[in-house]
Length: 135
Image 1 (cartoon, rainbow, N blue to C red):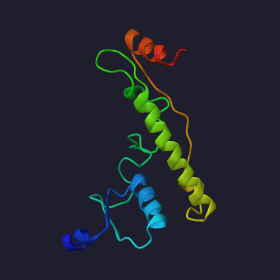
Image 2: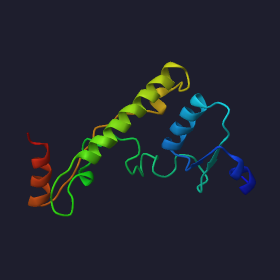
Image 3: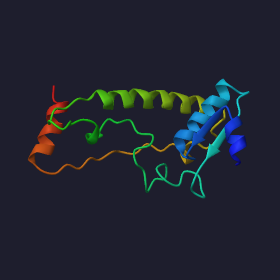
């Protein structure tokens, strides 16, 4: 895509992963007259973070994401994990809408809930995280 076309686009989505696809679909529903451009440096869509073998946390609920909680002083603040979870729930609502309206025709090829396992090592890592979730 030429620089001139990018400059004229109402929205430029960077990266052809699940988040750009979701945002693009949402924007198309909300603003059908907008022009949307997508740029991707790889030769395939969903080939980096959205790929199941390379997943860097895209499309997750943050319920078990230990790296969101302990700060450099060892205190645990779950505010970021809660915020990410709330945002993910809104995304799930949009995906449900997309499935109900036919935007997504084969939901299982697109959405696959999986269990999450977190590994921590050492006495301070496990006790810090356990203390954060204990009432």
